[in-house]
Image (cartoon, rainbow, N blue to C red; front, side):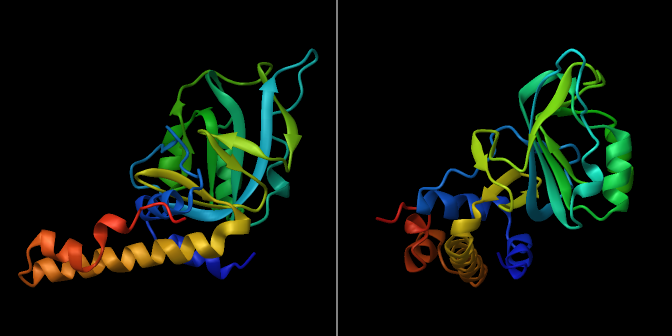
Length: 217
């Protein structure tokens, strides 16, 4: 897994990567996962965990944070649960201090004021104040998880921006990034052509706009 690919992904927006995923027949769009601030952006590799309802006595919800490598994205599958949080201000402060790239949750978090103040990117289904303590626990670490209907494995590449979050499977990242860069370049050519006086339909035809997202055989 090339760290240069993290930089490549950070240069692309999620809409362009989404189109590349569609072209290649890969489901990587994380449905309904959005930034808790409209300006949040992040790119990094996945540090994954799966959560579930708390046992009796309950397990922990956050003691893993010191194990997450710098520049990685904490990816939490809480089954889309929206009645109890799985992330709050203490985790945000530590994650920010340790240089993590961001947090992605199939579920909700709380304490959004601090993540906005620090500029620490959190992407989740929503936010609310009710604690997950004694309601939620970590069941498994370093596992394949489901985030908004997309499969995320440890080490996969995630990109988040104001449009949401996409995941690029590590085994496909070279071809996905190459396709996304091709789409980005074609769309830039179209913009430049239109700014130069060309009709939009002519520019789209010239640069094969209508084929950019078409599934390749």
